[in-house]
Length: 137
Image 1 (cartoon, helix red, strand yellow):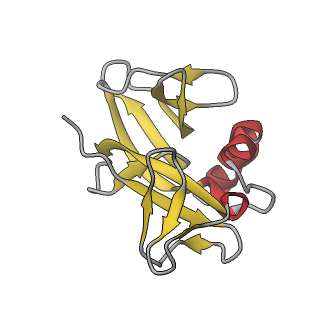
Image 2: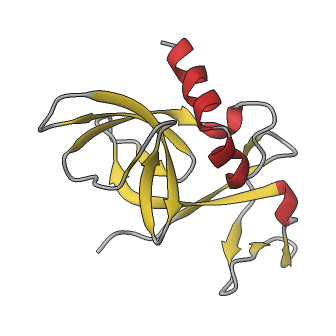
């Protein structure tokens, strides 16, 4: 059974939320210090997918990964999303749902780009996000 963990991106600060928080049963992000919900429009909740990359880094929704098929040997860059009740890797021309045969390396996350403020923004800007990380090589 995989470990259930989350992280929260704060759009206002352009960084991971540092305050202590929890997720309520209805999915609200609650600031423990103030015991009130964080503004949903300013915060993005992302779930751990239960895997680490080749360097031992935990992989979450919204992460950009380089992955290689251990069987075929091809290599691609994609963004991890949760869609259709499953974690998947989204690329401009296709999606990959099967994880067991892939060696993955975490390159970063999608929220470093201007205008990427929600998971919907991530989905609508896959090619832009991937091109950003390809240019950083």
